[in-house]
Length: 340
Ligand code: NDP
Image (cartoon, rainbow, N blue to C red; front, side, top):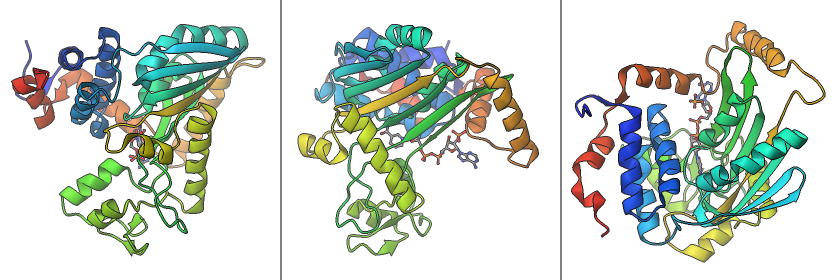
């Protein structure tokens, strides 16, 4: 029985999301992968990529922008190098489809480079990486964010997406440490939330149409004037994401994606994953990271990346996922179930 009053359990939420995604045209496989991703973000408190995103998924499927029944094509082009053509589907099911080959490459060579192209990804990246770190692998991934909303200093127009990067490492005796961040000063979603709440953003977040610094999120959105985080250093990382997640994979660069697809809710781009078995030719990696992490915590770094999510997850597993308007809507709104 679903308690719609204060909280909801994980599996019923997955089930409802899966049903709605299937009704919008996703295959059962794709619907389950995306539903688990979406519900997992909600459970971990990463709500900007949780149920809030459902309308984006449904619109993308119904409009045909994304093929919810895409059949990814795998090509192992080297002992440790897999190319995946997502065939205009979501990146996450393409990765799941490739999982047996990735597992095989890691078992045989200790390394897997996975280059996904012609894919759509507008979720958090940690759900893609965390399972590999739980299994003992170090992982790095990046996605071309699509829409050009980042204008580094000196650029006359926006040139990059918000281009996120995530990294995960096993830690002996603890959950993996995973960081997952946009290379822009602020994520585009957070900027929209600030605009909706009429809240100023910190100086250095972005610029207006004339390239002048502003703390008005509405002006930054209108100008697509987000700055990279860390000035030229963030711009360099964002450039790297374009090179690796689009140039190397064969997916579209941010500027090409926009030209191709006009006002589409998602963009066909690409994702790169690099996975490494850290104990090849050595051993004790996770134990060494445990020592490093202990040193950092003793130094006063009491919050490390993913701590916050794990705390939210533990609480949700105990008490259920807190009910929000967005969750209540997907159980209450019959129009979501229509094909209209
Ligand atoms: P945040 O700045 O909120 O967090 C970045 C990372 O830093 C997280 O791993 C977070 O861990 C950690 N962190 C945050 N605060 C602290 C702190 N005080 N001390 C230690 N660690 C901390 O993320 P962003 O706003 O940059 O990005 C949000 C999400 O948006 C990401 O999941 C990203 O993948 C996603 N995104 C996706 C895009 C796409 O195209 N698919 C495009 C752009 C962004 P924790 O999780 O535990 O808080």
